[in-house]
Amino acid sequence: MPELKQNKRNAGFASIPNFPIALTRIFGWAIIGVLAAFLFNNFLTNWLGWPGVRILANPSTGGHDPRIWLQVAIYAAAVLAAAAHVARTRDRSLRTDHQRVFGLNAVLIRAGFWAVLLIGLVDFTLAFLKGEQLLIGLVGAPLADTLGRAELRGAYVHMPLVAIGLAIALRTRVLALPWLVLMIVVAELLIVLFRFEFSYEQTYMGDLVRFWYAALFMLGCAYTLYEDGHVRIDLLYAEANPRRRGLVNAIGALVLGMPFCWLILSVGTAGRTGILNSALRTFEIEGVGDGMYILYLMTVLVGVFAVTLIIQFVSMMFGGMADVLGEPAPTGSAEGG
Image (cartoon, rainbow, N blue to C red; front, side, top):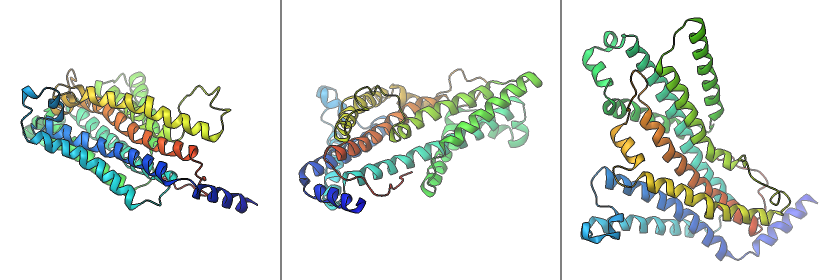
């Protein structure tokens, strides 16, 4: 009987017109492509000095620069690549794309976790050695001075650790965010122990906990969305049938979720003085004292939050539209993380 019901569902799905599925898939993958193009163009504009497509709103300020149209072409190429991808995989279901998009997001979340963990431990160690006047004795005055400059520590210590985090993320499949919770608890416990038993407390001890707390919430939001763990008012949603739930999820992702995240990115990358660009360009550590050099990273985590949520909202839209169109649920879930 279960096999008969599954065959009926599959037969019903086979009768669904391909056009709405293809249109949904093109739209979703185009959003991811445009997001990648947006981030790449932001780098070209604010790090390499390209004019940027925003200048088209006021051509008198330099709208004749031919590089503008190259940046516009990057967006067009992203949309065309999405359409070509869907054309090559025309038999793929929305539920499969739902899992694949989450798999892509899981790599980013894992990379963020490992980068935050490694940077936290290494920067904490450097701050401890500096605070206890041990750094010069271990590495010498010139290197100690280099490590004390935010732009050099960010470029030559933090960025390589981010690359290592990405490499680890590509070779593992465990999201490991619960381990970050454990690390936070251990760090808090050590702070209390050293404060009350040894009367010892330094700025960098609290910095580490705040850094990991920020990362936990900023990186965990997208995964929690995938697990449907966020708080929702479900007086009507809980009693709705799967198609209505899918419609609510798809519309919510498109109308509420994505615009909010795009707003964060647009404001944060509005020129070199945008809060995200400014923090990352200058490796901002204002008021750090003897603490950790991670203030700019806590700002950048807001951008990571927006990027991972946009990708996850695309996954949510795919899953919701699969429910709306009556795609059969997979017999075995393929974990994307």
